[in-house]
Length: 209
Image (tube, rainbow, N blue to C red):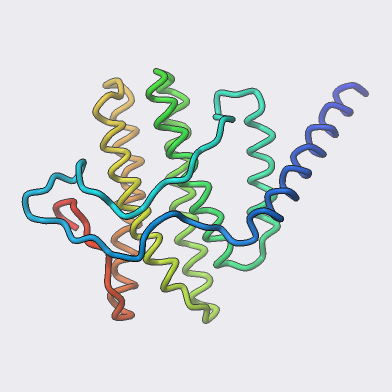
């Protein structure tokens, strides 16, 4: 029992240390994307369309790693210790972006069960990011820049999920398609808010948007 307690305490301490380092290095969440808003042509396919948003590197520690639990604790603490709703939205979007990258790697490695679980978690973080943005907007914060990022991220997620669907096993596809609803709704919600503010909306290459 005492050894288990020490192990748990050590794991928590390590996670907290990683969190502190992350907070110092990432006081502001940054994204790699340009300022221009792309406009698709009528003949371009959605899977080949260059969405002006680049997903961050998911890291070497994937959900299949025994060290993942430490990373998950770090993320949990980072998010819940952040009180500013707009910063929380940025953090949730970062977690969402990294997890969809992890999911894609897991599917490529034929680990479809864990890949689907990770994908679902990613898209739930995408929904959480928009909920935090709504909270920030209600508090009078200017969320315009974030909404533009978010709409681009939603389009990118939808594109990545289309790519995953091409090689995923048949039994995983219903869950993948269901997870894609988060990015579809995320784009529509952010599009509507941007339209209401008179701000240009990133164009979608997907029909029906």
